[in-house]
Amino acid sequence: MTEGPSSPDRPEYWQRAKRTLARRDAVMGQIIRACPRIALRRRGDPFRTLARAIVGQQISVKAAQSVWERVVAAAPALAPEAVVGLRVRRLRACGLSERKAEYLRDLARHFVDGTLHLERWPQMDDEAVIAELVQVRGIGRWTAEMLLMFSLLRPNVLPVDDLGLRRAASLHYFGGEPADADELRALAARWEPWRSVATWYLWRSLDPVPVEY
View 1 (tube, one colour):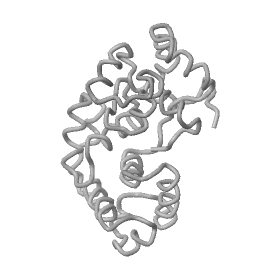
View 2 (cartoon, helix red, strand yellow):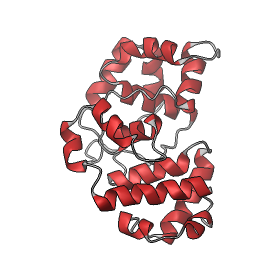
View 3 (cartoon, rainbow, N blue to C red):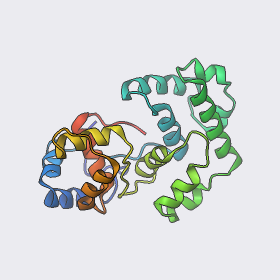
View 4 (cartoon, helix red, strand yellow):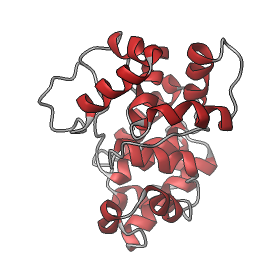
């Protein structure tokens, strides 16, 4: 889907970040120019973003989308209250493993019980939000980082454990050789404070269709 300049769901910093990244990094500039008129977009509320990330853990984007569509069909509003009411058996019928089904129900319970402090997140820094989220079963750092990027629209997230990011960095910056987390952080120093934007464009270099979280 193309993303025009007036979309309310696009981060307000996007154009500024694009210009800065392209000026600092010639390789990134080429990637950005190859992906015109699209941008990261806010993808629903925090519960939906986290639930979608749990579904996508350790499976392909295509497989995750298929499972996700079945989950949404089982609970069309995808509200925490609706997911809490679904039996594990019903979630497993959507294509989820038993563990992921339990994770989704546990996440929904945290939202229903109010043990996650959503109202505070806009004032909390990235690491504080991550620290709160990883207390929930099934949410690790990567899943929390997806929330920071796709729900809170934080500009400077670098999900170093993301396989797509590592693959793209290897292809464009390391001559096809694997890059470890430290090498990725060193490379990304030039992208500060727009590492989320650079990450998003590296994803697009592998797959032009934006993933939804």
